[in-house]
Image 1 (cartoon, rainbow, N blue to C red):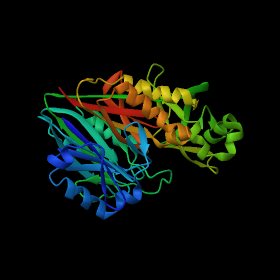
Image 2: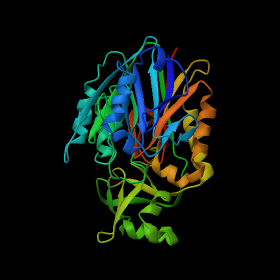
Image 3: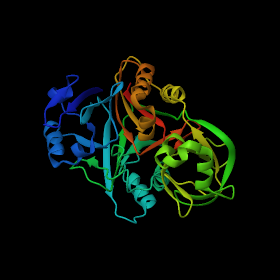
Image 4: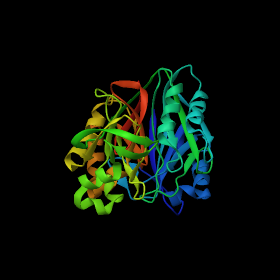
Length: 378
């Protein structure tokens, strides 16, 4: 397995960080993550396809381009991967407003050849898709296979996101990448690092990702009461105060981020479904714990230190905004934990897809979470 990391400048100039595939051989798959304006230009895919004419090219717009142990200041990061004996299969589906995302994602994953399938990686539109419906559909078709991935980003704008799949980047698209090979080892890790506070409560009334009542109190009133001086800054200040949710007492909690509020309805809008009857707690950030959480995600990874490996990193735009100038610290922890033979590439996203350790065969939609997918050949 050979990995070649490259930067594509806005003027079309390639800058190589390693030599190999891009100069001497064809890659099986090329991952490209970039700023929205760079990704949406038709010229960008033309440059990628000219450089890698026989490769699958996938990727997305992002809220921060990850390459190595830091966020790159360049407009696009590219990782070209050539396997020795393994291979990939790629499918995509477009959707329209009001489409049944659960049904579409199930059908999409179902297109992947089942025999020999080791892992599924998902890249999806990040603005127009219901991420909770997306993962439900994926889970319907996994059949003993683990899935990870993420939702495309758009900086901190939340206006438009774009996805590559062997063509010019477009909106309203979901991509499924299947990995195959007897020598292929793929593992994942995810961890938040947020601190819960206050009493455990119950969602009394909600619809999809909109919560109206928690413990018979309007959800927005509850948030304002707990946030104090931060209440006037909602919904932006909500990035610092996500919600942990779980169905049963002993379940692992999933994190949900605030993306909006409705003063008239006194409701809170989250970046993922919050079903009625779920147990919830408010959360707050501790910078050290967030960085440590990234390290814990990396510690869940199975990796061979003597072999080159690709580490696909999908972390949340909310973490990036909260960490600020310290955002590279979480990437450094991941890089140091995985070792020098791990090549990190990825993006800050509008939603992360990964399973918990306790149930590897069921992926979840996460917010405010560091997720990792490590790939290598024995």
